[in-house]
Amino acid sequence: MELVDGILKKDKRAAARLITLIEREDPTAIDALKKLYKYTGNSIVIGITGPPGAGKSSLVNELAKKMREKGKTVGIIAVDPTSPFTGGALLGDRIRMQELTLDPGIFIRSMASRGSLGGIAKATYDAVNVLDAFGMDYIIIETVGVGQTEIDIVKVADMVVVVLVPGLGDDVQAIKAGIMEIADIFAVNKSDREGADKLVTEIEMMLDLSQNELDLRPPIVKTVATSGIGIDELEAKISEHLSYIQYKGVLEQKRKEKTREKFMELIKFHISKIIFQEKGNIIENLLKDISNKVIDPYTAMEKLLQCILKGE
Amino acid sequence: MQCERTIRVLIAKPGLDGHDRGAKVIARALRDAGMEVIYTGLRQTPEQIVEAAIQEDVDVIGLSILSGAHNVLFPRIMELLKEKGIDDILVIGGGVIPHDDIPFLKKCGIAEVFTPGTPISQIIEFIKNNVKK
Ligand code: B12
Ligand SMILES: Nc1nc2c(ncn2[C@@H]2O[C@H](COP(=O)(O)OP(=O)(O)OP(=O)(O)O)[C@@H](O)[C@H]2O)c(=O)[nH]1
Ligand SMILES: [Mg+2]
Image 1: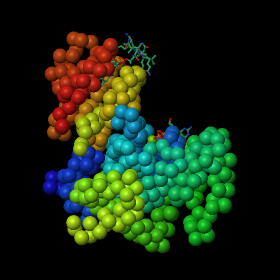
Image 2 (image 1 turned 90 degrees about the horizontal axis):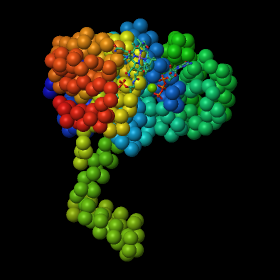
Image 3 (image 1 turned 135 degrees about the horizontal axis):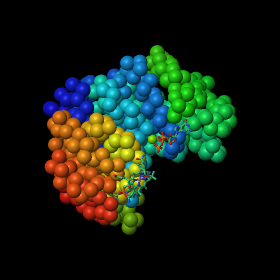
């Protein structure tokens, strides 16, 4: 298999092509992913999320530079939203990462969300495996600009940095529900602007209220991505967090849970597909009866299950 | 049930040219036509453009130049693509480009050049009819 060999030999074109095939849901992508699976599990996956325009791409750029200084290789997947009306997308994250383009130890892929609503794309999961098998030390995923409920990033990342900026009004309160709870680290970016300290205090207060004794309290780092201020500290906090979760076995545990979740999803997807294909007629008939109140949906479900189990 | 394949396009501005309105207009128009458009911003070297095209695995590279440097930069990009053995990307150009220069650019491998006043629909049509992959 040409693509697989290419990726294992660190050919960026092969990696890029396989990601395209994954996005297109091309069956040959699955063949390649099967062969690559045993080479995965070595990269550290870091999610960067936060509201639109918070400076996520600029921060990714700075972080990647720091990691390269330490001799680490970095794969970047930057997700931007697909227009629900036209199916098209404008992928602009690369603008902030121009200086990384020619670095042989970096691979950047822009990805459209293509209808997924959780802040990343369906293809992001498998694209991570491609860059993992490719041999990247770190994989950074930039989500689309998120509100509060787009938190699929936790399903794929080993740790998450939530980027906030001062001057968005009552937003700590507003976004508390979702993305605030998935943060392993907070970056208060654009801290050259007024209100950064106030925002830090607000986050601290929120953490005071919601802290579970056993949890690691997420540190808050003030950054200015456009001038590199605070990036050293952010990188240090990321390393610290990673050492901690590795040492405590939390990372291994998290990854096991993710593997489990992913496999369950795969099973559900394929089993329901088969059932809808093979028992379509029975389902339609039951549905008619349910609508006509001839049968209730619970009994109908039991009937369907019996058909499936008996192989009728 | 696969519908029409999504076309991926890199819109790039090579050289020191700071005119980016046209590139942005084209980027938005192609997005509205259902394409995924990667815009890399101003001041890209030919090397950066080719590398980004590889990593993004695009079907089309769209180059925008209004500075007059097209006769140097366009051929350089085509040369780099050739060096890397890439022949499945459609390369088109646009901007302020004298008509007399267009035959030379086409000889270098630029599939088509769109000058000011070209209706966007014509550009979209051209891309849809000519993507290679
Ligand atoms: C607006 C403008 C500016 C603005 C630019 C603002 C910006 N951010 O873009 C400002 C004032 C900053 C500016 C500055 C300069 N400009 Co000026 N500028 C223009 C002007 C008047 C209009 C350009 C424009 O925005 N058109 C609107 C857009 C939508 O059209 P477009 O870019 O042509 O794009 C269309 C097509 O060309 C095509 N297209 C373009 N790109 C692409 C890409 C693809 C893939 C495809 C398919 C199609 C395509 O499709 C588009 C839609 O139809 C032109 C004159 C003109 N009439 O073109 C001069 C012009 C381009 N500028 C010129 C010059 C010389 C300069 C300056 C060097 C100094 C000066 N004399 O003012 C500086 C240099 C700036 C720099 N750093 O590079 C010259 C260039 C001469 C040349 N090529 O030999 C021109 C032609 C004026 C002239 N006749 O002298 N400029
Ligand atoms: N003043 C200031 N501006 C910044 C800082 N970081 C980023 N910016 C600017 O903020 C704008 C948005 O930055 P991006 O890095 O593109 O933000 P993003 O979160 O990736 O944006 P989306 O991907 O569109 O959601 C750009 O104009 C940056 O130059 C900062 O620390 N201070
Ligand atoms: Mg971004």
